[in-house]
Image (cartoon, rainbow, N blue to C red; front, side, top):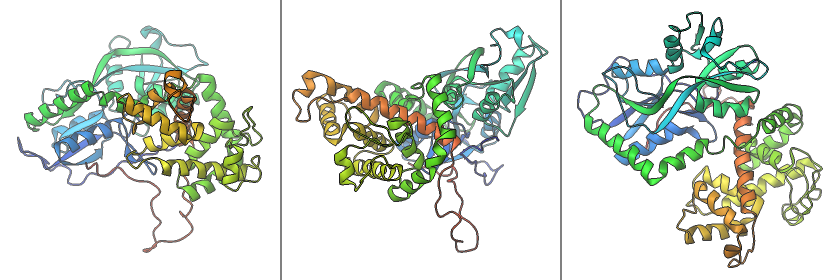
Length: 468
């Protein structure tokens, strides 16, 4: 069964009307994007999020403007909407287009197209091997355009362009061997290979292209200049690298064997404990998939797990923590999951209010491994080293210093396994991504009561405003 994407497009109102008169300074930026994991997506935990979404959010905040994001159907649809005045700029992991009316920003990444096949098939490593092969792509994408150019060299290539599937959906279809091959961008493959570890990237098609923002023909040149200056500033300040780490810094953590094992246990073992994680979400407000990812990292969902240091159970609780949270049997999965979730929630609440999500959750996960004493010590070291103690990007470089004598000899908390905590958190981030792809969010009251008006509430947050 094909999994439904966890993001939804919104309808555009006033289509056909020019949203910006020539050279007029906008009061609101209308930003076009696509619902892809490299661009923008929507879920209950984080609302509207994604690399390009956050990048444009920072830009409009700097300008002091309001903004609205609208999901287009494809790259080609984005270009058409820009030309029709239905958006002023576009951010969706885009490359420059061969159209004199559409202007581009300075590049902020590089990307290439990658042909993917199932590992059970012979890898396609040469262009001539594509003869009489059917290659699946997202309709209107630059991958479709690349195959159209390639068609001149290999006229027997068959291209199947779909408007109903995302790049991750195409990868799923290749993984299940419904499709022989698909063409996606390399960033999508890096993300999707954790979800579908039986895929192989066998052939680069086309040249490496810069990733840019696109601008409508009527957008004022000074605003484009400000966009370019902003992107340049983010590169120089390191903010671009921090944003990159937030969305892509953890995706290469697992080996293929790690992903295969996790997905197999997700299908065979997790169903026995899903309701316990649901209940823990209700009491703590933490998405049950994060809690399940934490439990897997701790014990691989083994209720009887015991470590040489004395921590026990599915959530690997110490005796003191278990006593404090009212657990009389750490090997009881119900008690362990409840208490582990509560402990994580308590740690998150203890962190300073200056730490925003999702960094707050990631640091709480690190404290779950280290203890809050070591986490506070690491925050002190961060300040000494002129690093920002409120961002995970900085703290994951500082935490390993807890194992160095020149640091821990000056700390009350002593030596800490900071590097181990970083590995734990980065693994949990990947496990959570996989669970978000395969498992549905939990809505405990979704069908228990009929709201006023007699219509059920939606179980998603549509992409809407992107205000500073």
